[in-house]
Image 1 (cartoon, rainbow, N blue to C red):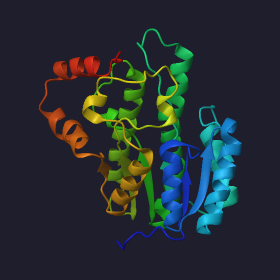
Image 2: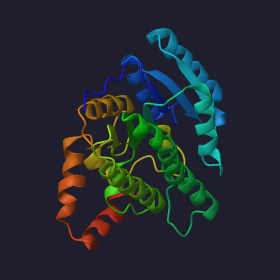
Image 3: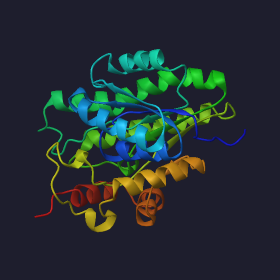
Length: 270
């Protein structure tokens, strides 16, 4: 298959009003991609302003879609509106998500169901909706912004880690199924990143794990993620220490010890 160029490609990014999604939108704009940007309706004005900045600065097309992906038909609604706006999407970037901190049995069922719908179901549905046209056209990319949390249990935010594990498994399995079609699925798996997702959901200001992983800059994560995708690195964990911990060390540490480290390392620091 020939090299996949981003210039002129149509890129859909969810959760594009802040954090990694916002930084990814700038990276794609710098590559000359046309941008179709999604956000929660409450962030509509923020996203419109940002889209206009990108359009003026990089001379690319931008269209915004303020749609709540956690609603029952939110992903389908986004898909239909995007299809009315453009003939095809060449790159789907699943990025929108939330994080809830606390013990599983103490966080309300409604809040955790919301997380599952946004972090898991929306990814799953949007992949299934956009993938057939890509396969038919024999060209396309899906970039799922997942997390290093996908590779082991995450005590104190158990449902978040479980949702990321689902997306990771799904991404790798689907990518294997479509080998040779000209379409590929990639995952970007950063450790904790300084984004609004850590400012809500009861997440503490500091956890013990920061001593190992640090707190990444979203702009740096986005740049590295785009670079990894262009190099066709199917699973990318930014940072050498994070890569070693989550890709190598995890294979040799007994499961019981992994769970204990997760419980201890993800606690709030005083």
